[in-house]
Length: 251
Image (cartoon, one colour):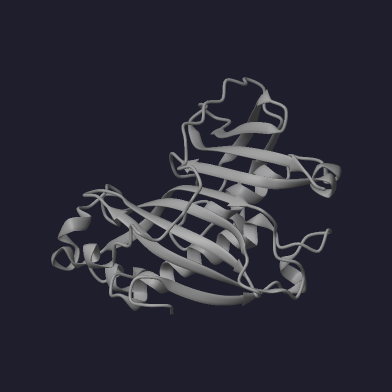
């Protein structure tokens, strides 16, 4: 760890964590970010294990990742994470992805809520351990990317669909947040990833999906290279998450 407010965690881009181009996948990077958030919180006394004892847990509300490049196979890299702000019902947590030589590969912003496992409703973060979570706020640490924005999708015909199965379901009994990312990325052709970098990926989680749910993926393209995606239940049309993907051509 770098200091008491910023956590730093080391990784290697393993061969089974990269795609056909030899670069780390967004799904694996997302998993690393969420794990680092968990490590950082647990090291400071407000991790999931501690919260679970009182029937509370953390849930991810929004995530935005912006990259200059992805780590290559076998490349060492690090994720740094810190808390930017704490509000009564939400907290902003940021990340920096650093190469082995110290260069910055990208940044990420996330929004989290603490919810009751009984009611599934948000709980008061400022009441957590007497409000001590605010002791770890680190607003001076730079994160020079835009916050997650509003995503609106008007498409009425799905470009893909899937039924939530075993590998989609997490320990809370609903569709894993990273599995949504992977299903969304599978909408796009291989050649796009060969010739373009997924420079920015945003996702906002709206509702929970469960085993057996049949889900449709609806896509709008507002400008070239920018795609908005909404995952909805095919039965009733309830939206579960919305995402924005911005691709830029590789040099």
